[in-house]
Image 1: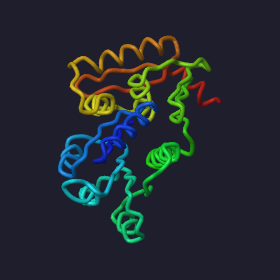
Image 2: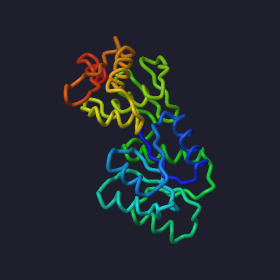
Image 3: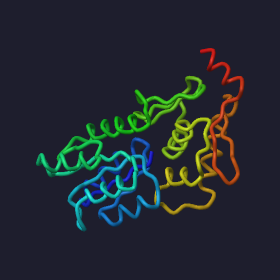
Image 4: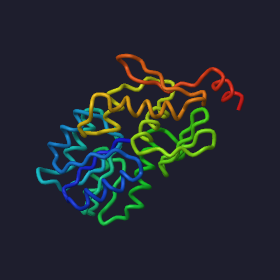
Length: 230
């Protein structure tokens, strides 16, 4: 998952980034309205954590821009402003949740998981495809009931492919999800795809490359038929 943190307090921004990264998320952090809107123009995020009091204006401007462009990305407002009118305005503009500072990181993490489940229309933290099971809460995965020890970016790649199993995921979308704004080599994504392919060998699942389009997680006919019987 690719998260955007928009927060001008350096300490809090760093704490949020570290907490979310520990759970397998790719996180980009910004502190200004203009920079945030530019980032949202350039790439897609799975969730935005938004402070209201920013140096160049109100964070509500970011929220207004998102909804004016029909962008449904979930937004959680994080602010010291606890006045009722601020909460009401944020929710009326299309915020999905509201958490007043100071807050518990544990509560924030739970709310983030809930918003992501809702946006993906899932009932729990598990994603399943064939013999693969992925738990977004613990950032862990199993293949045929055997735990896979996945580094953060491999986990993020597997999650993206599993959430879109049987469908093409564009290369650009995967790069954005794994690396955010970090500068990486042209073949960086291919390295992670190759590692996942080795882990899936013999499982009846494969990652297919579609030249010029992207990648697709597929199940063999035997695996598909077995899953239907279950």
